[in-house]
Length: 271
Image (cartoon, rainbow, N blue to C red):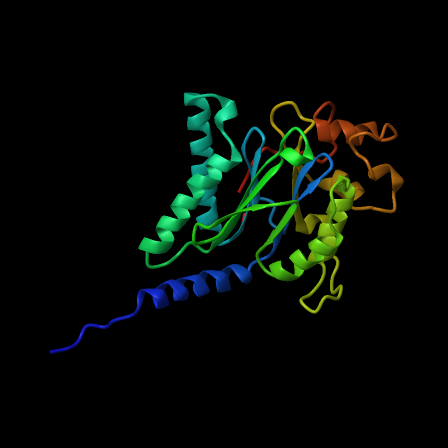
């Protein structure tokens, strides 16, 4: 009689975890980090129609790396969860913590019961009234949840980027400073040297702006992003308060015309 094939459960779990980590690490990285006026999302993404970064609810944003169709399904499910909870109860009841718990249950269930885990890592972030009130949650392929303080990097070169953020990020940085820092780290190869120069068109950038009264999510692109990525220009250091650039201030706060060539949409889809 043929003996049944047996694999220890520990080995199955290890193989699934290795499979998910290996495939996630092949993708382009994404960075989420706090600045003095909110939370910034930066990802290397040349696509203009497939988004890694999007809005979930009024003051909640979403970023992901990995397999696009899988994290897009998670994004859509998160929007449904938030809309239903906000409609049934109150908009204030929709929080990043609750959304992270819902995602953790889904990811954990798939990891333990399905033959293939989801090849994704996601971040759910909520902007508060002050930088101390901001909440950033990182969720892994196995459903584990980590509350991050200040910044998080996912995808390819995540360890190298995290090391750079640990050394250089600090509370109170302006939007221009955190974007410049993130792009500099994305430009570095695994050996730690600058090997390329990413253009604004190769980046997907969005923010959760705590100064906006309700919908805090805002995409940054075009001339606005180019100005923010010029650290030598003193007029781009403090976009929320610099009276010499009222157009830039109005763009970020939603109080005037948007010079970002029409790309500031509340949500979208990516690779």
